[in-house]
Image 1 (spheres, one colour):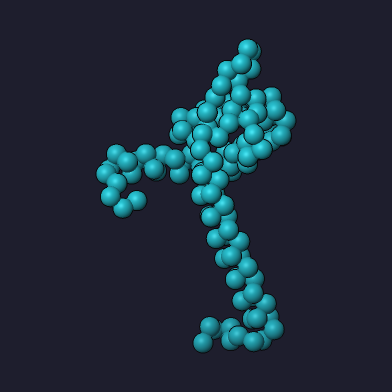
Image 2 (cartoon, helix red, strand yellow):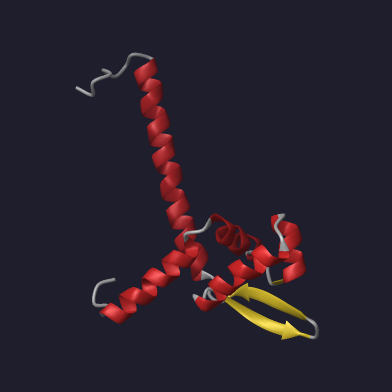
Amino acid sequence: MEGLNDAALIRVAEVFKALAEPRRLKLLNVLRDGERNVSELVQLTASTQANVSKHLSVLLQAGLILREPRGTAAYYRMANASTYQLCDIVCGQLVKQAETTLALQQLLQQGQLPADGN
């Protein structure tokens, strides 16, 4: 983020805001396997068409996905695969934190760490 002006920081915040919704992350995860139309996304996410369309619109406005009309259907795909790298970094960090917390809890339960942290 170093060197970004205020307008660029606002744009970055918009992208993170679009990513800050579990259903949108689920849609992006489904698109990992390739492009899909709305009907496929509805089925694969066990959601309603209205809900999927609403979230696709947000992802599209944020520039995270692309839309390609074909006949009566529209197909969606990732705009940039590096978005998955960002998500994988965040998810990996959360897994590490959870593993550390679990390990500390186990040590506490085994009496190998004082309960007051000293």
